[in-house]
Image (spheres, one colour):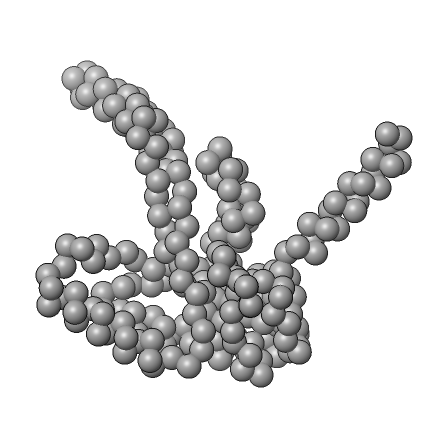
Length: 225
């Protein structure tokens, strides 16, 4: 294939990739969609429901029902599974070994590093992260896209709203209303033991990067965004 034809194919591929992304940008920790909608991402703590007593389980379910009944907008709960990257931890142990003056402790640390390395390789340990997507679309058209249901379906381009761009003059106003929803969700979840933290701009970019490049985060640490 001639070089010009190859460049043309690459250009068309790049354009198609950009069209696939529903995200227009990230500003102040807020995702701005091409439709003009805004999204906030909360990371939530986990809970071992099975270890709770019967009364505790009933209380949690009751509080969760009250939480769902208290909100008048859609939410998306998603779980992200990733193979655990233990390399940074092992590197920190190697540095600790070099600084250790006790020879016995050096040997123990080296044995521990080898044990952890072999255990992770054989067990294929997976870490899980829990996220809550809080939406805001001017006009109140907050609904999950038809046929969505996949991870981050709130980012689907199937839902089109006639809203101004979130990066325009109305951004601060819309962000303020989105933040009210974030606070409402956080307060509702903490009542039955779920703690949340809103992702900042760098964390949101890293999360989106990991969604579209799932293999890269296992190979190396993402550079500062």
